Amino acid sequence: MKIGIIGGGQLGMMMAESAKKLGHSIYSLDPSIDCPITRVSDKHIAANFSDTKAIKKLIEISDVVTYEFENINLDYIQNNEKKIPQGLYALKVSQNRLLEKNTVKNLGVETPLFSVYNSSKTLPIPSIIKSISGGYDGKNQYKIFNNNDIDQLEIDDSMGYIVEEYINFDYEISVILTRDKFGEIGYYPIPINKHKNGILFTSVVNNTISPEIIEKAQKISKIIIDNLNYIGTMAVEFFVKGNQVLFNEFAPRPHNSGHYSIEACNVSQFKNHILAITGHHIIKPILTNNAIMLNILGQNELYIENAAGIKYAYTHLYGKKEYRTDRKIGHITIVSEDNLSILNEIVKE
Ligand code: ADP
Ligand code: MG
Image (cartoon, rainbow, N blue to C red; front, side, top):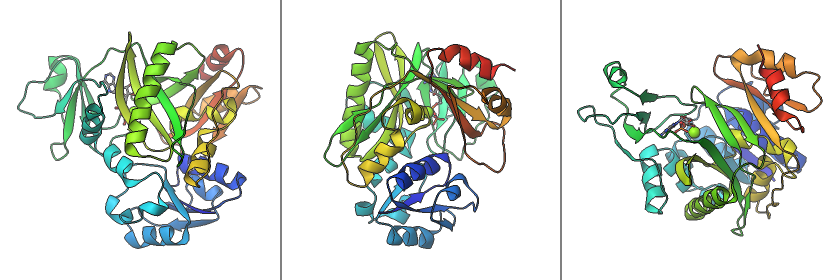
């Protein structure tokens, strides 16, 4: 089939790599002429995401269209739902944190307490302020731990925000799951995710999460994905505290915390995504090895050197032209009996 991909970053690139192995052709669209996906795609349309004509053309020439990120103007893809299996509803909900939290709450899912931010209202302590739209990797978020944080708060009032209860969680997890058009769902083994400055640092999959927590998280994820009538791979992020599994957010696309599946599962999150959006049955994911995925940010070039030559460390570099601070340039998946000591070896300064 001819698959159109909106967004040419690493997620688009890894989707394209899986799709090519399955014999598909890739048409990509991204403003940059040398973004990661161009290393893989058959035809690249260099156009802004606001270029209606270009998006229309991509949809026209493709049999099926997928996207790697949430901030696509819905007006441009309206009426093309048939060619976009992930659907517009999931996209619409995920674009707006308030709508997202309310939608999920209305499904009976527990979330941290939240409300619309209003500069004249007293802020709860501890809390976290998040922009309603346009946030990723912890951007446009402000932690409020004391009155000093409130005094120093400088936020752009032209944007809408929510205030959320700050959860002193035990750990964070994400459920990566793929749903096909037959309604079947495949759940990936759940990674435990550690963040640094709001950016994913590592995802660890090592069978230490209790069956009760896994069951709760999968059950909630199923409710959400079924309700969104979503086809493809998505991720649902949670905070775990004691027996509580609190919904944080979902991403209607393959997710950074699912990259480990490339080496550590029988089927990657990208391959299942492509199988689902091209109308096939998905493959039930099975973990073949415990794994740790480590992100490489622009300032972490040293990790690449440190990992080179380590037998069980699989380095993926995305071919980004610039190594920018706090931007992901690649990741390393470690698949060994000895994951932790190899991780320590790689991150040592
Ligand atoms: P993004 O869209 O940037 O990923 P998230 O809401 O997932 O936004 O926030 C990024 C990270 O910030 C989370 O993965 C978590 O580590 C931390 N965080 C977000 N909300 C809370 C909260 N209510 N309590 C504690 N930590 C939080
Ligand atoms: Mg997040």
